[in-house]
Amino acid sequence: MAQTRQLAAIMFTDIVGYTALMGNDEQKAFELLNKNREIQKPIIEQLGGRWIKELGDGVMASFNTVSDAVNAAIKIQKVCNEANDFQLRIGIHLGEVVFENDDVFGDGVNIASRIQAIANPGSIYISESVHNNVSNKKDIQTKFIKEETLKNVKEPVRIYEVVTISTAESSDSIVKEPSRKSPENSIAVLPFINMSNDPEQEYFSDGLTEELIANLTRLKDMRVVSRTTSMQYKGTKKDIGTIGREISVRYIMEGSVRKSQDNLRITAQLIDVSNDTHIWTETYKGTLADVFDIQEQVARQIMDALRIQLTPTEDVVLKKRSTLSPEAFDIYLRARDFLYRRTRNNILFAIQLFQKAIELDPLYAAAHAGLGESYASYYQVCERKEIWLEKAIESCLTSLKYDSELSEAYAALGAAYFSKGSFDEALAATQKAIGLDSNNFTGYWILGRIYHTTDRDKDAVDMFKKVIVLYPDFYTAYSDLMMVYDRLGENGKCAELLEITLGEMFPRYLSKHPDDARAIQFYARDLLRKGKNQQAKVEMAKALDLSPDDPVILYNVACFYAKLSENGLAVKMLKNAVIAGFEHYAWIKRDPDFDNIRNEPEYLGLMKGK
Image 1 (spheres, rainbow, N blue to C red):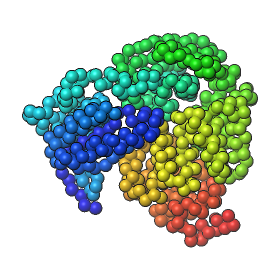
Image 2: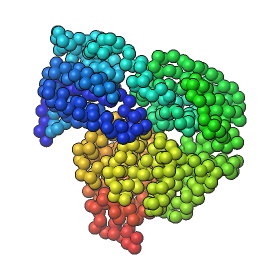
Image 3: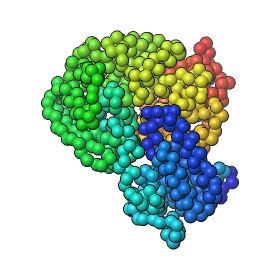
Image 4: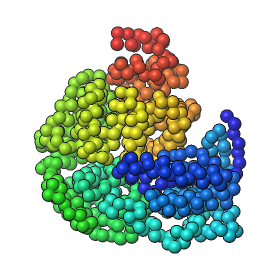
């Protein structure tokens, strides 16, 4: 591959609030992508720039001169503001980069990307190296903003803003105008902080956050950011204004929970992001038995503060109790915490806890749905017996008997039907799940898998993209999307997605979950795709050390070594996976990863009669 190293001005642009828009109106989001391309590409080329690539809703371009890059950015912002359809953040840095074929790499790229990410909506942020080159230009004015320590950059970078007509009039007006950047009644509930002395109580503060999000999602006049997006900000040091701009919401709720035995102390506050003011702050005290009343009070206070009139149906929804047993509710939250960890033993713990919650309240629909999802998940890591899928289907149908509008029950039912091969039933269940809750990423994910399995790959692409928007750290969806792109022959899109997983998603996720063996083995597979074989082997060995008996990990290790043409090790790992409970022989037979070992005697012996 031909490489050239040179000094270049790198420009990154990004559509403000695109992630939230994608979750709210997918068709409009795709239309904006096309319009963004139509605006930027001619301007970049007109000013001698080179269109490198699109990264989701972002654009990367390079220029031979700094003044061309800055003038292009100014013109792009001007046309974009006149169109009045969306706003951009733009970042520019001058540095040494490496051009290889149609791509560009290096610290200069990383710094430009980081500068763009911290820019205000509608603004152009530049590094000091860019500022020094344009400060003597009469038609370009700049102002110093701050010195910033950027991720993966050793030295702090001095940031300047290019002063345009719109920013000169009011550099803050765009940021503070809610109608431009977010719907009036849009809200994100940030993860409540666990203030208990016991860190094991984390499940309760997270669960309370999820329950409040679920309550608000049922109200039609509210746009509520999904649980998965909100949970990305757990433990964040970002300020409220930054978070609000990143996810394009007008209001943010944050709070804390102190739980000591059955005693509760919950503090909540609602903040208007547009002017950084506290609308109200409230402290609720009581026992575990009061938790449902507190959830209702918080939801009602939000609606009152935003002057939203509840319909009679919504009033009934807020009064509805998922269970009358506080103890069952507490156990249910523990169970979900174990289920989210997705390992074999944790799924077994989740099953036991969901069963205990159901013993305390046999009519607890959410617990039945959780049990169904657990059975469907456990099916993947145990002996391949139809009994687990039948248990999953039975639990989900029981859940729907008690609550016919429970989205997660339909999603779990769709997963079970999909694993069973009943694709029509799976399609109907997942579509119902999404219809009830547009933030149900599990429903979109299963739907994507259904489409891929039934040769509707373009539809599958749309679904997996939707999952990633709703849950940016759901590594399985990235893998599924790359698998579909592979089958479509979209090598360029695979490469772009690989840059995102290796450069952003996995570093972000694994910094929070360093012991997630399944995530690590997906990371190893992506490293292998990138050609970093030795590093990939190290990571795959780490995953195997963490979960040596997990049949799914053993199976993926077998795939990994088969792709490396280390056939003996691949067959050995495949046999271990089968012994551990991976008995999906039909899938093994058609998995293209095993094409290299089809004629191996041990493989033929393993598959004999299957």
